[in-house]
Length: 492
Image (cartoon, rainbow, N blue to C red; front, side, top):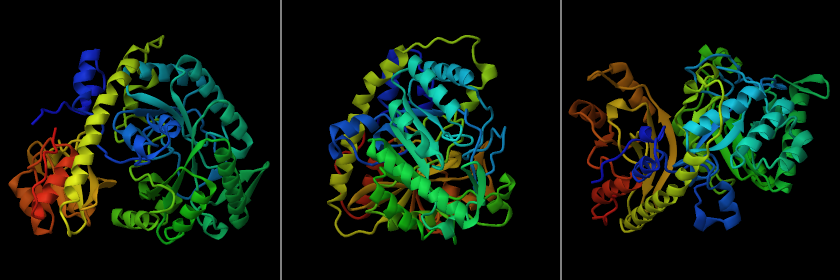
């Protein structure tokens, strides 16, 4: 069995040789994000546009990073789930930043990150307000960064209210990926989510405000698609308000030509100070999110991996290195050196091919299983697409569905770390059990007998027999053995 080099070794490679060694055995923990399609499933032109974007392509998420620069603080709507608190470094949710930047600072920070994070492929502006409402700063930042690092993909997120006013400029600037948050297509439902919008020099409230926002969102979506720009639609799932309605939203955005639909759970912790949090509106459970996502299969393709990133996030999805690149830590002057990013890209193709071949082999073996139930499997992983983390050290589990039809990524579930200094925390274990609702199997690099027995008492099997295997290979091997067949060699 190959010894895994952790994802951490990729954070600051010092030579081409190190990058080659690391990439040969590492990458990203999630096995499906953005579109699950690969190069064989889409036109070469479309594949070229998404293959290095970690939000729009499953393959890209294994290898590439994004960064957001917080240059757009102003916002033109109020959402009941949003409170743009400032300087909350320990929170990971949209609208939160540690530093607001001007375009000068943003350019400096992007260059510094590009020099230190060779995986960087995408620059996004996601607020902390609205990228289109604060358009002057957004545009200046993108234009200046493009001159310095022309191969960075440009990406922005918007609530859509001001979007139609800037679509032509977006197209002219070669911003090829735009995310619009659309939570409702019924103004009555929208009025329960948005207290007010600011449009045409005045503040609107109630159903009238929601109607204006909806019309502008749909117009912006149509205009972007007409210009060939790829659009991802984000929707916040709010139980009892828009959860079932999001089925209709999915149909509507598919009809308008959206490339992806990302259904995200409401974050409603009262400590965040949002209206929904303070009034007791609950967020959905992981199984409720999955059930809704399953209902819309066949509509707009789903993005199931979203981490609901901060507006100043840096790194591969699922990690945030933003606190390493605050302005006070940057050099006085920076100069872009493309060598490491270029070298990184030159070696990624080999690993992509190996992982893809492994997944195909796993799928072929599962097809031989015959009649067996679909199960949810939670995987403890530190990265690299491998089962490579101790159960007690996990702060997140990747959840996959396995059946004779294959292994499919369905989401991630964050947990409190169970083991500290060799001792398990009772409260953390109880929280893990609750979070793993619906999961039949936990796969990890190692697990002690005590937590293994406790999991089995609540109906969850635990296995470390496939430590350091590729995730899909390990899951397929366990499942095939469980249901009476012997798989081919799937591991690297």
